[in-house]
Image (cartoon, rainbow, N blue to C red):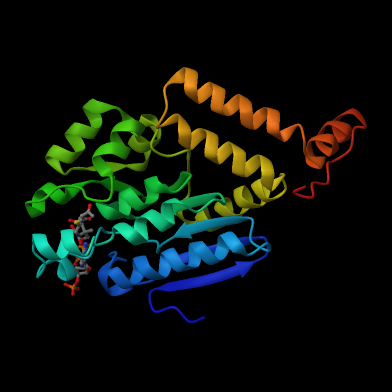
Length: 258
Ligand code: CAA
């Protein structure tokens, strides 16, 4: 299928989804979010895809929601049509691991989209921010909630209230990104990381993703119980037998997702 706002590269087992609205620094309009939610849904169903990389250009991952599209909209358009929300919910519910490979600007909805991925690998030129306050609004893709969980109240509050940008080094120190790599190596590094994940049992990957995401919703006792039940469940899989046998036999495991 041809996409208007995305460039897709599928080299099994990794799917690279590149946001592609260069004239608008990949601003997230309704079409882009619709296409993104469709590709994520398809990727979840496609057994030849094990990990997804979401990226943009060297200048911008995404400079936010599309201000020109939002300009004409009022409360009723946004609220009644549940603008953005359906697509974002579908993207968020993707079960396979998604790496956000961020170079350049990840602002507003762009920062929020990256935070909705499973982790962020940042190029050394990445810049994160929630500048919606400069437009007389506030974050609307979950930024007040997500950024606060990643970097804590003080930095999140400052970022949202001032609209300032955070560079890659500050983002790494604050826990927003997992790692910084040179901008020219971003896709190479993201792909190497994706391939490492792709070697594992998909059953473990899905369970780990569910369990870590639950940690943001549940208290410690409930969250730990949820983790333990998934851990117990993995003892019923062939991949558990294979993984432990391979360790004892000093060989590389061959997982079958069974
Ligand atoms: N929406 C629509 N168009 C955008 C855009 C956006 N979020 N960000 C950039 N563009 C467009 C510009 O209008 C410009 O288009 P034209 O050439 O037609 O004028 C083009 O992309 C290039 O942008 P600049 O000329 O501004 O590039 P720059 O290098 O000088 O500045 C920038 C880069 C600092 C990222 C600046 O473009 C900027 O501040 N963008 C807006 C960032 C922003 O406010 N994001 C939050 C959006 S609201 C939101 O996201 C709400 C939410 O939480 C859901």
